[in-house]
Amino acid sequence: MSYSEAAALSALKDISDPISGRDIVSAGLLGDLSFKAGVLRAILLIDPARAKDYGPVREAMEAALKTLPGIDRASVLMTAHKSAPAVTKPRPNASGEAPKRSGNPHQARRPEGYQGDAHVKKTIAISSAKGGVGKSTVSVNLAVALARMGKSVGLLDADIHGPSAPIVLGLKGARATTVRVQDRPLIKPLEAYGIKAMSIGFLTKDDGPIIWRGPMVQGAMSKMLWDCDWGELDVLLIDMPPGTGDAQLGLAQDIKPDGAVIVSTPQDLALADARKGVMMFEKVDIPIVGVVENMSIFTCPDCGATHNIFGGGGAEAEAKTMKVPFLGAAPLAMSIRESGDSGVPVAATDDAAADYFKVMAEKLLANLA
Ligand SMILES: Nc1ncnc2c1ncn2[C@@H]1O[C@H](COP(=O)(O)OP(=O)(O)OP(=O)(O)O)[C@@H](O)[C@H]1O
Image 1 (tube, helix red, strand yellow):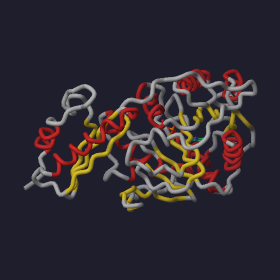
Image 2 (image 1 turned 60 degrees about the vertical axis):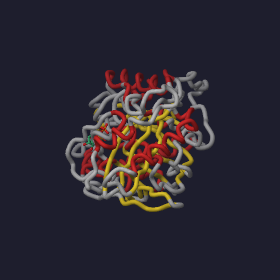
Image 3 (image 1 turned 180 degrees about the horizontal axis):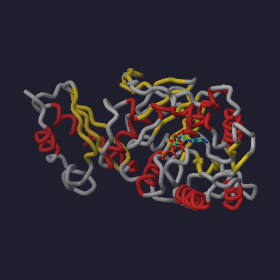
Image 4 (image 1 turned 30 degrees about the vertical axis):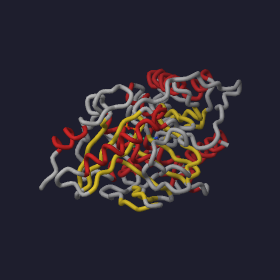
Protein backbone atom coordinates (compact mmCIF):
# COMPACT_ATOMS: atom_id res chain seq x y z
CA MET A 1 0.00 0.00 0.00
CA SER A 2 1.37 3.43 -0.87
CA TYR A 3 2.05 6.41 1.32
CA SER A 4 -0.62 9.09 1.61
CA GLU A 5 0.24 12.62 2.73
CA ALA A 6 -3.40 13.22 3.64
CA ALA A 7 -3.29 10.25 6.02
CA ALA A 8 -0.05 11.55 7.56
CA LEU A 9 -1.51 15.03 8.11
CA SER A 10 -4.66 13.56 9.59
CA ALA A 11 -2.60 11.44 12.02
CA LEU A 12 -0.54 14.47 13.04
CA LYS A 13 -3.64 16.55 13.66
CA ASP A 14 -4.38 14.30 16.66
CA ILE A 15 -1.24 15.55 18.40
CA SER A 16 -1.42 18.74 20.46
CA ASP A 17 1.07 21.56 20.77
CA PRO A 18 1.85 21.72 24.53
CA ILE A 19 2.21 25.51 24.35
CA SER A 20 -0.81 26.67 22.33
CA GLY A 21 -3.05 23.65 22.92
CA ARG A 22 -3.87 23.55 19.20
CA ASP A 23 -3.07 20.56 17.02
CA ILE A 24 0.49 20.74 15.72
CA VAL A 25 -0.53 21.13 12.07
CA SER A 26 -2.87 24.08 12.65
CA ALA A 27 -0.35 25.57 15.08
CA GLY A 28 2.11 25.75 12.14
CA LEU A 29 4.68 23.47 13.76
CA LEU A 30 4.94 21.10 10.83
CA GLY A 31 7.78 22.36 8.65
CA ASP A 32 8.06 19.73 5.97
CA LEU A 33 6.98 16.22 5.20
CA SER A 34 8.95 14.07 2.77
CA PHE A 35 8.69 10.43 1.86
CA LYS A 36 11.32 8.29 0.21
CA ALA A 37 11.95 4.55 0.06
CA GLY A 38 9.64 3.71 2.93
CA VAL A 39 11.00 6.43 5.22
CA LEU A 40 8.75 9.33 6.17
CA ARG A 41 10.58 12.39 7.46
CA ALA A 42 8.95 15.34 9.15
CA ILE A 43 10.33 18.62 10.44
CA LEU A 44 8.93 19.90 13.72
CA LEU A 45 9.42 23.66 14.00
CA ILE A 46 9.92 24.69 17.59
CA ASP A 47 11.10 27.54 19.72
CA PRO A 48 14.59 26.32 20.75
CA ALA A 49 14.07 27.67 24.26
CA ARG A 50 11.19 25.17 24.67
CA ALA A 51 12.99 22.17 23.12
CA LYS A 52 12.41 20.02 26.22
CA ASP A 53 8.63 20.48 26.01
CA TYR A 54 8.64 19.12 22.48
CA GLY A 55 10.54 15.85 23.07
CA PRO A 56 7.27 13.99 23.80
CA VAL A 57 5.62 15.63 20.77
CA ARG A 58 8.36 14.32 18.55
CA GLU A 59 7.97 10.82 19.98
CA ALA A 60 4.20 10.97 19.52
CA MET A 61 4.66 12.09 15.90
CA GLU A 62 7.05 9.25 15.11
CA ALA A 63 4.75 6.73 16.80
CA ALA A 64 1.71 8.00 14.89
CA LEU A 65 3.45 8.17 11.52
CA LYS A 66 5.07 4.77 11.62
CA THR A 67 1.73 2.99 12.00
CA LEU A 68 0.52 4.41 8.67
CA PRO A 69 0.27 2.12 5.64
CA GLY A 70 3.35 2.14 3.42
CA ILE A 71 5.68 3.56 6.10
CA ASP A 72 8.65 1.43 7.22
CA ARG A 73 10.20 4.11 9.38
CA ALA A 74 9.26 7.61 10.55
CA SER A 75 11.83 10.19 11.55
CA VAL A 76 11.02 13.60 13.01
CA LEU A 77 13.63 16.33 13.35
CA MET A 78 13.13 19.34 15.56
CA THR A 79 14.43 22.59 14.19
CA ALA A 80 14.37 26.23 15.32
CA HIS A 81 11.15 28.00 14.48
CA LYS A 82 11.46 31.24 16.40
CA SER A 83 14.87 32.70 16.80
CA ALA A 84 16.02 34.36 19.92
CA PRO A 85 14.81 37.94 20.07
CA ALA A 86 17.10 40.62 18.69
CA VAL A 87 19.44 41.81 21.35
CA THR A 88 21.77 44.70 21.87
CA LYS A 89 23.92 46.12 19.12
CA PRO A 90 27.52 44.91 18.86
CA ARG A 91 30.13 47.27 20.05
CA PRO A 92 32.95 47.81 17.57
CA ASN A 93 35.88 49.36 19.32
CA ALA A 94 37.43 52.64 18.34
CA SER A 95 39.88 51.06 15.87
CA GLY A 96 37.03 49.30 14.09
CA GLU A 97 38.04 45.83 15.32
CA ALA A 98 35.14 43.43 15.57
CA PRO A 99 34.07 42.25 19.00
CA LYS A 100 35.15 38.66 19.59
CA ARG A 101 33.08 35.62 20.47
CA SER A 102 34.31 32.35 21.81
CA GLY A 103 33.32 28.73 21.34
CA ASN A 104 30.85 27.25 18.93
CA PRO A 105 27.85 29.57 18.70
CA HIS A 106 25.50 26.74 17.88
CA GLN A 107 26.16 24.72 21.01
CA ALA A 108 23.03 26.03 22.67
CA ARG A 109 21.02 26.70 19.52
CA ARG A 110 21.56 23.53 17.57
CA PRO A 111 18.29 21.60 17.50
CA GLU A 112 18.19 18.30 19.34
CA GLY A 113 19.59 15.52 17.22
CA TYR A 114 21.62 17.77 14.92
CA GLN A 115 25.35 17.56 15.49
CA GLY A 116 27.08 18.03 12.15
CA ASP A 117 28.74 21.32 13.01
CA ALA A 118 29.83 20.32 16.52
CA HIS A 119 33.50 20.66 15.59
CA VAL A 120 33.30 23.86 13.58
CA LYS A 121 35.37 26.56 15.31
CA LYS A 122 34.12 29.66 13.51
CA THR A 123 31.13 30.30 11.29
CA ILE A 124 31.20 33.36 9.06
CA ALA A 125 28.31 34.62 6.91
CA ILE A 126 29.31 36.23 3.62
CA SER A 127 26.56 38.62 2.65
CA SER A 128 25.68 41.33 0.19
CA ALA A 129 22.74 43.68 0.16
CA LYS A 130 22.52 43.52 -3.64
CA GLY A 131 22.62 40.56 -5.98
CA GLY A 132 25.39 40.08 -8.51
CA VAL A 133 28.13 41.98 -6.66
CA GLY A 134 30.32 38.89 -6.51
CA LYS A 135 29.42 37.52 -3.08
CA SER A 136 29.74 33.90 -4.22
CA THR A 137 32.96 34.68 -6.05
CA VAL A 138 34.41 36.25 -2.91
CA SER A 139 33.12 33.39 -0.72
CA VAL A 140 34.66 30.64 -2.78
CA ASN A 141 37.95 32.45 -3.32
CA LEU A 142 38.27 33.35 0.35
CA ALA A 143 37.58 29.70 1.21
CA VAL A 144 40.22 28.45 -1.22
CA ALA A 145 42.73 31.08 -0.04
CA LEU A 146 42.17 30.01 3.59
CA ALA A 147 42.63 26.35 2.62
CA ARG A 148 45.88 27.21 0.83
CA MET A 149 47.04 28.79 4.10
CA GLY A 150 46.61 25.40 5.78
CA LYS A 151 43.20 25.97 7.39
CA SER A 152 40.44 23.39 7.28
CA VAL A 153 37.58 25.17 5.58
CA GLY A 154 33.95 24.51 4.72
CA LEU A 155 31.72 26.45 2.36
CA LEU A 156 27.97 26.32 2.77
CA ASP A 157 26.04 27.76 -0.16
CA ALA A 158 22.94 29.11 1.61
CA ASP A 159 21.36 30.46 -1.55
CA ILE A 160 18.57 27.92 -1.83
CA HIS A 161 16.96 29.65 -4.81
CA GLY A 162 20.12 30.26 -6.85
CA PRO A 163 22.95 28.00 -5.68
CA SER A 164 26.27 28.82 -7.30
CA ALA A 165 28.79 26.62 -5.44
CA PRO A 166 28.35 23.67 -7.84
CA ILE A 167 29.41 25.92 -10.74
CA VAL A 168 32.21 27.92 -9.16
CA LEU A 169 33.77 24.81 -7.65
CA GLY A 170 33.52 22.76 -10.84
CA LEU A 171 31.08 20.35 -9.16
CA LYS A 172 28.10 20.78 -11.46
CA GLY A 173 26.03 17.59 -11.49
CA ALA A 174 27.77 16.14 -8.40
CA ARG A 175 25.46 14.71 -5.75
CA ALA A 176 26.03 14.46 -2.01
CA THR A 177 25.90 11.08 -0.31
CA THR A 178 24.92 10.13 3.22
CA VAL A 179 27.25 8.66 5.83
CA ARG A 180 26.54 7.27 9.27
CA VAL A 181 28.40 9.07 12.03
CA GLN A 182 27.88 7.78 15.57
CA ASP A 183 24.77 6.01 14.39
CA ARG A 184 23.22 9.07 12.75
CA PRO A 185 22.88 9.65 9.02
CA LEU A 186 24.72 12.83 8.00
CA ILE A 187 25.14 14.35 4.56
CA LYS A 188 28.70 14.16 3.34
CA PRO A 189 29.97 17.45 1.94
CA LEU A 190 31.71 17.35 -1.42
CA GLU A 191 35.35 18.32 -1.64
CA ALA A 192 37.15 20.52 -4.16
CA TYR A 193 40.27 22.68 -4.04
CA GLY A 194 40.93 21.61 -0.44
CA ILE A 195 37.57 22.74 0.90
CA LYS A 196 34.41 20.91 1.95
CA ALA A 197 31.30 22.26 0.28
CA MET A 198 27.57 21.85 0.67
CA SER A 199 24.86 23.34 -1.49
CA ILE A 200 21.22 22.63 -2.21
CA GLY A 201 22.52 22.02 -5.74
CA PHE A 202 24.13 18.80 -4.42
CA LEU A 203 20.86 17.61 -2.93
CA THR A 204 18.38 18.24 -5.74
CA LYS A 205 18.01 16.21 -8.88
CA ASP A 206 17.81 18.84 -11.59
CA ASP A 207 18.87 22.42 -12.23
CA GLY A 208 15.35 23.86 -12.37
CA PRO A 209 14.36 26.79 -10.15
CA ILE A 210 13.63 25.82 -6.57
CA ILE A 211 10.34 27.14 -5.29
CA TRP A 212 10.09 26.34 -1.62
CA ARG A 213 8.03 27.67 1.24
CA GLY A 214 9.80 29.40 4.13
CA PRO A 215 9.73 26.43 6.51
CA MET A 216 11.10 24.12 3.83
CA VAL A 217 13.97 26.52 3.18
CA GLN A 218 14.59 26.61 6.91
CA GLY A 219 14.53 22.80 7.02
CA ALA A 220 17.00 22.52 4.14
CA MET A 221 19.32 25.06 5.75
CA SER A 222 19.23 23.27 9.11
CA LYS A 223 20.05 20.02 7.38
CA MET A 224 22.98 21.45 5.43
CA LEU A 225 24.37 23.22 8.48
CA TRP A 226 23.66 20.89 11.35
CA ASP A 227 23.11 17.54 9.68
CA CYS A 228 26.19 17.61 7.47
CA ASP A 229 29.40 15.74 8.26
CA TRP A 230 31.61 18.84 8.41
CA GLY A 231 34.12 17.16 10.73
CA GLU A 232 36.82 19.39 12.22
CA LEU A 233 36.74 22.82 10.61
CA ASP A 234 38.66 25.98 11.44
CA VAL A 235 36.20 28.10 9.50
CA LEU A 236 32.85 27.51 7.87
CA LEU A 237 31.97 30.25 5.36
CA ILE A 238 28.29 30.64 4.60
CA ASP A 239 27.46 32.22 1.24
CA MET A 240 24.18 33.94 2.14
CA PRO A 241 21.37 34.73 -0.28
CA PRO A 242 21.60 38.39 -1.41
CA GLY A 243 19.48 41.04 0.26
CA THR A 244 18.59 42.48 3.64
CA GLY A 245 14.95 41.45 3.87
CA ASP A 246 13.09 39.29 6.36
CA ALA A 247 14.34 36.05 4.81
CA GLN A 248 18.00 37.05 5.20
CA LEU A 249 17.42 38.44 8.68
CA GLY A 250 15.67 35.24 9.77
CA LEU A 251 18.45 33.14 8.30
CA ALA A 252 21.09 35.20 10.10
CA GLN A 253 19.21 34.74 13.37
CA ASP A 254 18.88 31.00 12.85
CA ILE A 255 22.49 30.45 11.84
CA LYS A 256 23.83 32.94 14.37
CA PRO A 257 27.32 33.07 12.84
CA ASP A 258 30.36 34.33 14.75
CA GLY A 259 30.65 37.17 12.31
CA ALA A 260 29.62 38.54 8.94
CA VAL A 261 31.56 39.77 5.93
CA ILE A 262 29.80 42.28 3.68
CA VAL A 263 30.67 42.31 -0.01
CA SER A 264 30.01 45.47 -2.00
CA THR A 265 30.96 47.02 -5.29
CA PRO A 266 32.32 50.59 -5.11
CA GLN A 267 29.30 52.49 -6.51
CA ASP A 268 27.46 54.86 -4.18
CA LEU A 269 24.23 52.94 -4.52
CA ALA A 270 25.85 49.64 -3.68
CA LEU A 271 27.58 51.20 -0.69
CA ALA A 272 24.30 52.59 0.60
CA ASP A 273 22.94 49.07 0.41
CA ALA A 274 26.03 47.67 2.11
CA ARG A 275 25.28 49.99 5.02
CA LYS A 276 21.88 48.31 5.27
CA GLY A 277 23.66 44.97 5.40
CA VAL A 278 25.83 46.12 8.29
CA MET A 279 22.74 47.36 10.11
CA MET A 280 20.90 44.09 9.54
CA PHE A 281 23.65 42.08 11.23
CA GLU A 282 23.96 44.63 14.01
CA LYS A 283 20.25 44.23 14.71
CA VAL A 284 20.80 40.58 15.58
CA ASP A 285 24.06 41.12 17.42
CA ILE A 286 26.32 39.57 14.79
CA PRO A 287 29.61 41.46 14.51
CA ILE A 288 30.90 42.56 11.12
CA VAL A 289 34.34 41.00 10.74
CA GLY A 290 35.05 42.53 7.37
CA VAL A 291 33.94 44.54 4.37
CA VAL A 292 35.19 43.56 0.92
CA GLU A 293 35.18 45.77 -2.14
CA ASN A 294 34.70 43.65 -5.25
CA MET A 295 35.04 44.69 -8.90
CA SER A 296 37.31 47.50 -7.82
CA ILE A 297 40.10 48.71 -10.07
CA PHE A 298 40.35 47.48 -13.69
CA THR A 299 43.71 47.15 -15.39
CA CYS A 300 43.56 47.09 -19.18
CA PRO A 301 45.27 43.89 -20.31
CA ASP A 302 46.44 45.59 -23.54
CA CYS A 303 47.87 48.92 -22.39
CA GLY A 304 48.19 48.43 -18.63
CA ALA A 305 46.18 51.58 -17.85
CA THR A 306 44.03 51.39 -14.75
CA HIS A 307 40.41 52.53 -14.51
CA ASN A 308 37.97 52.71 -11.65
CA ILE A 309 34.97 51.68 -13.71
CA PHE A 310 32.56 51.51 -10.76
CA GLY A 311 34.52 54.00 -8.66
CA GLY A 312 37.19 52.89 -6.24
CA GLY A 313 38.01 52.92 -2.56
CA GLY A 314 34.43 53.66 -1.53
CA ALA A 315 33.96 50.49 0.49
CA GLU A 316 37.12 51.10 2.50
CA ALA A 317 35.99 54.65 3.33
CA GLU A 318 32.53 53.35 4.17
CA ALA A 319 33.97 50.67 6.46
CA LYS A 320 35.96 53.34 8.26
CA THR A 321 32.86 55.48 8.73
CA MET A 322 30.92 52.52 10.08
CA LYS A 323 33.85 51.50 12.27
CA VAL A 324 34.01 47.99 10.87
CA PRO A 325 37.15 46.27 9.55
CA PHE A 326 38.04 46.42 5.85
CA LEU A 327 39.48 43.18 4.44
CA GLY A 328 40.55 44.40 1.02
CA ALA A 329 39.53 44.90 -2.59
CA ALA A 330 39.41 42.47 -5.49
CA PRO A 331 39.90 43.94 -8.98
CA LEU A 332 37.43 43.75 -11.81
CA ALA A 333 39.33 41.13 -13.77
CA MET A 334 38.59 38.85 -16.69
CA SER A 335 40.52 36.07 -14.96
CA ILE A 336 38.19 36.20 -11.93
CA ARG A 337 35.09 35.99 -14.12
CA GLU A 338 36.48 33.31 -16.41
CA SER A 339 37.85 31.14 -13.64
CA GLY A 340 34.63 31.34 -11.61
CA ASP A 341 32.44 30.49 -14.55
CA SER A 342 34.67 27.59 -15.57
CA GLY A 343 34.74 26.07 -12.08
CA VAL A 344 38.38 26.81 -11.21
CA PRO A 345 38.47 29.53 -8.52
CA VAL A 346 41.14 32.09 -9.28
CA ALA A 347 42.52 31.70 -5.74
CA ALA A 348 43.48 28.12 -6.64
CA THR A 349 45.67 29.32 -9.51
CA ASP A 350 48.83 31.39 -9.82
CA ASP A 351 46.95 34.30 -11.33
CA ALA A 352 47.87 37.69 -9.87
CA ALA A 353 44.26 38.15 -8.75
CA ALA A 354 44.71 35.21 -6.33
CA ASP A 355 46.91 37.46 -4.15
CA TYR A 356 44.02 39.83 -3.43
CA PHE A 357 42.04 37.00 -1.87
CA LYS A 358 45.07 35.81 0.09
CA VAL A 359 45.39 39.24 1.68
CA MET A 360 41.68 39.23 2.60
CA ALA A 361 41.95 35.73 4.07
CA GLU A 362 44.90 36.78 6.23
CA LYS A 363 43.03 39.81 7.56
CA LEU A 364 39.91 37.74 8.19
CA LEU A 365 41.89 35.23 10.23
CA ALA A 366 43.49 38.05 12.20
CA ASN A 367 40.03 39.48 12.95
CA LEU A 368 38.81 36.08 14.13
CA ALA A 369 41.84 35.30 16.30
N1 LIG B 1 36.03 40.74 -9.34
C1 LIG B 1 35.38 40.28 -10.43
N2 LIG B 1 35.84 40.51 -11.68
C2 LIG B 1 35.17 40.04 -12.75
N3 LIG B 1 34.05 39.33 -12.69
C3 LIG B 1 33.55 39.07 -11.48
C4 LIG B 1 34.18 39.51 -10.27
N4 LIG B 1 33.45 39.09 -9.22
C5 LIG B 1 32.42 38.41 -9.73
N5 LIG B 1 32.45 38.40 -11.07
C6 LIG B 1 31.49 37.77 -11.99
O1 LIG B 1 30.23 38.38 -11.77
C7 LIG B 1 29.17 37.43 -11.87
C8 LIG B 1 28.38 37.45 -10.56
O2 LIG B 1 29.22 37.00 -9.51
P1 LIG B 1 28.66 36.15 -8.28
O3 LIG B 1 27.81 35.02 -8.75
O4 LIG B 1 29.82 35.82 -7.42
O5 LIG B 1 27.75 37.25 -7.61
P2 LIG B 1 26.75 37.09 -6.39
O6 LIG B 1 26.76 38.41 -5.69
O7 LIG B 1 27.06 35.90 -5.58
O8 LIG B 1 25.42 36.86 -7.18
P3 LIG B 1 23.98 36.41 -6.58
O9 LIG B 1 23.37 37.67 -6.11
O10 LIG B 1 23.30 35.86 -7.79
O11 LIG B 1 24.20 35.41 -5.50
C9 LIG B 1 29.84 36.10 -12.16
O12 LIG B 1 29.85 35.86 -13.54
C10 LIG B 1 31.27 36.29 -11.68
O13 LIG B 1 32.21 35.49 -12.36
